[in-house]
Length: 159
Image 1 (cartoon, helix red, strand yellow):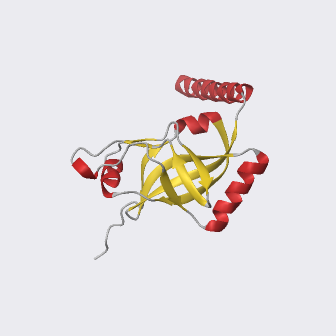
Image 2 (cartoon, one colour; image 1 turned 90 degrees about the horizontal axis):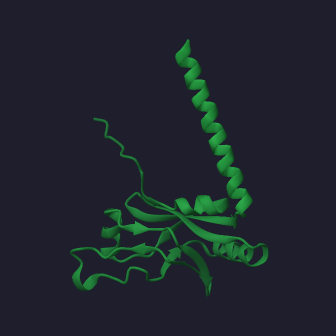
């Protein structure tokens, strides 16, 4: 009897603002150190990555500004929603990211939170900030592509 394999990745939240404000050069997967009530709250989708960023302190990668709402049934075990959380990565990867952020002006931004084989993971991006004209250029390309698609679909309807 064949067993059904359920999807390994279950995306909980994405940081849409990061894709708008930054060029994503590389992305990494990192584990996240959480407490039980935080995991339950994340499973319910009560997480916000909008203003989150990462920093390297004493060789550890920390995520700041990630809001995890308190679990309703957590009572005394709930943690502070905006507490600094530690990300779990290899030391060489952390050292490389730290070097790039200090020398070349990159930022480390959490892009998404998902569950992989029952464990909470964070996709972290090595990002470079967009200028205002870059954002306008991307928006103009997107509207041009949308207009082309619209024209093609209208043309198909005519025939």
